[in-house]
Image (cartoon, rainbow, N blue to C red; front, side, top):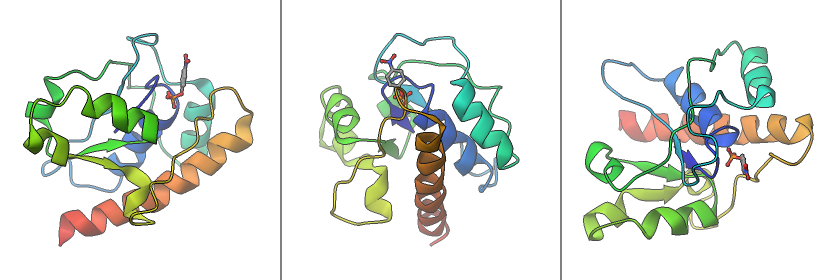
Length: 146
Ligand code: 4NP
């Protein structure tokens, strides 16, 4: 799960998907394309909305996406089109590129929609992001099971 800062959207995506999969079968992680929040806790507004849904995401710390992640992960979900482009720019080959998907294309295939960056907005943006990611991770779960 990859966004820009790895403090708002992708920590929620990681926490929500983790809560739906068997940890012995699926390893879920998140990262940001930027380096500003390395080592930091998720944004308090993400922590709060997660907690309201019974999820604790305070074990997470910000890290930056790197080229090495292509070797370690089978699926790489970008939160928005800008993240998608930044991730692809680090891909070494076609196999790497094929691992990268826009996460909302799981819900609305081919529409190339963004999970909006909620960083500069209020708490309602985080609620909206949570609901989008809850839907998207349900679809990912279906895919993993099929
Ligand atoms: P995220 O949100 O990509 O969902 O973690 C952001 C967090 C921080 C910044 C931008 C987006 N920032 O510019 O510091």
